[in-house]
Length: 188
Ligand SMILES: [Zn+2]
Image (cartoon, rainbow, N blue to C red; front, side, top):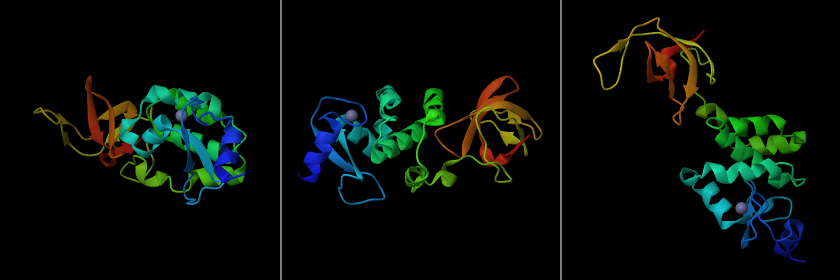
């Protein structure tokens, strides 16, 4: 049997991430570059399109990972984990699924390759990673964009949120919601 036929048999001709009964194509799971049964998943156009163009992601489509993350197939686990990881900063349910997910150590290592997480995380002035819900102190007077106000040095922002941009966090100071540059804060 050809690789593609083997893959089609494995997935029962359904997308391995969203179970769509749609035309499927093999998708190589990076950093691998060759389509093999161990390193590829069968994806529908919807999944493939959103993975290749993350700016087109329809968050609700990926609720499908609730099921596919339990696949026995390592490449499917890796794809599910990576998609959840990408969603988890904004979507609590994705983080919940990640927390539940189980992978063998070598599969987990594969999943983490190339995620370049460190560059993507907001960090405070000391390089400490900032997480949703942290309290931070502003370390210098910061002008508030679009107004004449200034956030004073020493202002505490409680329960920050993360943003799409790892350089910015958001939170409330002086009763106002605002974005603040992460490295002008210190984690409390
Ligand atoms: Zn799909």
